[in-house]
Length: 154
Figure 1: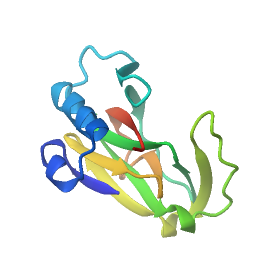
Figure 2: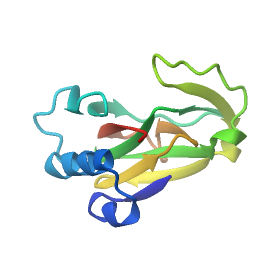
Figure 3: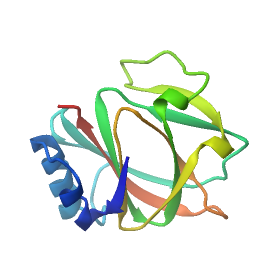
Figure 4: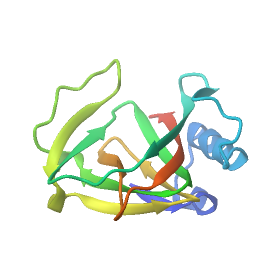
């Protein structure tokens, strides 16, 4: 997992052509204005999703997700959210991997999940071994707009 501002992500990552396209897309659309709910940036290799939601507190047990075929770049446009993180190998009660949705879920006690506060202008990059729990509140619930860019693993 990597967390940084959008402007500081490129020097922290080994940029494949697909990751470069994803970061260039985010740099050009950082406000999210005019974006549809889903947009192909480079076919199925790189696509973006605009999300709007209200965060909610984590319970005693946190549900995490992980992906095998895609890297997630989750960029917060406005508001702030906690994105819980744990290495996939630590996640308990793992579901069977769903290749159609590219997702595997599982749970961990909240005390075993690392909370990462992500504010407007910041992004988290989650790789296949990074289980993550987005949409969590830091204190009170917050309205969040974010762009999630899915980048196919090269």
